[in-house]
Amino acid sequence: MSSSPPPSSAAASPSCPKKMIALRSSDGETFEIEEAAALQSKTLENMIDEDCAGTPIPLPNVTGKILAKVVEFCSKHAEPGVDDESLRAWDAEFVNVEQATVFDYILAANFLEIPTLLNLTCNVVADMIRGKTPDEIRKFFNIKSIFSPEEEEEVRRENHWAFE
Amino acid sequence: MPNLSFDVDHASPEDENIGELTVPGQPHEALLLVLPYLSLSGLIAVGEACTSLRDVLRDDVLPWLELVVDDPLSRRMCDEILIEITSKANGKLRTLGLFNCTKITDGGLQTVIERNPLINKLYVPGCTSLTPEGVINAVKTLSTHGNILQSIKINGIYNLQKQHLQVLRSYVRVNPKTLEHKCSTHFGLEGDCNICPVDVEICPKCNEVRKVSICPIETCVRKRDRRLSECRGCSSCIPRCIQCGACVEPDDLEEAEAICADILCMRCWLQLPKCDFCNKPYCKQHAEWRLNPSGSRGFVCELCAVYEEDDIDV
Image 1 (cartoon, rainbow over the protein chains, first blue to last red):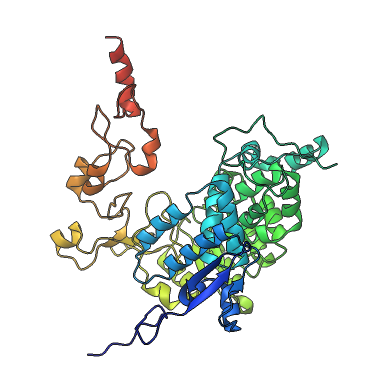
Image 2 (cartoon, rainbow over the protein chains, first blue to last red; image 1 turned 180 degrees about the horizontal axis):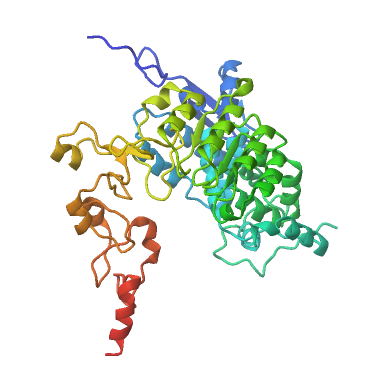
């Protein structure tokens, strides 16, 4: 009647507590994250392997505000037994934030090499871009256009086929 | 002297984008990471939006490795332009996604394939100028030199027969995980599964090469009423609800009518808001077509709106 133990390290018992990893943000805040959750980040996975036992891993590129959310994301995605639909709904809520924050998530996901978070956040911004004209893109992302008349003419010529 | 002016004329309290920018007026660095996620129309628009993004697109290979050509560029994409655009990948193209690009010919496809031997995702659904033989040739070419195709989409190619499908399947990597996958939940316009190695199979009911899906519900109506062990077939053989993918029996097809003419199961139909006049709903995808009559919380569909205007004068 015995079944094999669950493979993930998320299984815990009194004699085998979950291993916690400490992270330090650029502004000095410390966060704890379960190893299973931390392994979602290739960057952290490499650092854990090098066994910086005990000392918090410094993350100079990520502020405390963003790191807290990244820890939340990784922990949620390491949770066992969450069905696809609920996770999708949770992800949608997670990225339902202002533009500047989504950008911060993207940079953090890139730095920490978290493919799930990077895909999620980049797709959100890609959706914002979809269907917009260049002018609408400039307004939406607060970009100033500095094309010279010659440059504008050149780019229009290059892309003429797309507008015929 | 750097230009530090902020575009206050266009900023408004609702603008989310008044944040901290590294350099005012320049695109946020995160946008560069988003480029590989854009389809071709997005890349073109972004390249016209500002010079630094234009430069990145001109000098960088990364945004061009997963090419997706869809609306509104599909019908304008021809062989010549395709060869030019794919050349930006410098031979390292990994995904060739041509959705409903009706002008692309076998010759054009073959040229792109020969110049980009690392393609592992070949999507040509709805590319009606392609022939099954042309696609097979392309897949054969890609499979030389140890390259293994991960997935292909060929729904909508004319004259696809069983034997073509068998040949194509033999070239696509058999990933044990994907063998078990039975497409059920992806429906409606997006109906695009990225797990299935091949998007079509032989429909067990009509024997044609089609997109086939199974019912997302364990004991669905068809299985129950007809005592079947599986509810599996193409959309012509088994009508499915556009929202949940459940099979819909003929009676419900009549009862659960939508204004947008999409198919709904009774359960989804009951949950949708209905037009004040004809008591039919729009499906979720067409919800934005609802018109709100002044002062009410209900809505009027575009067909009934004509009559509502007439009534006002009475």
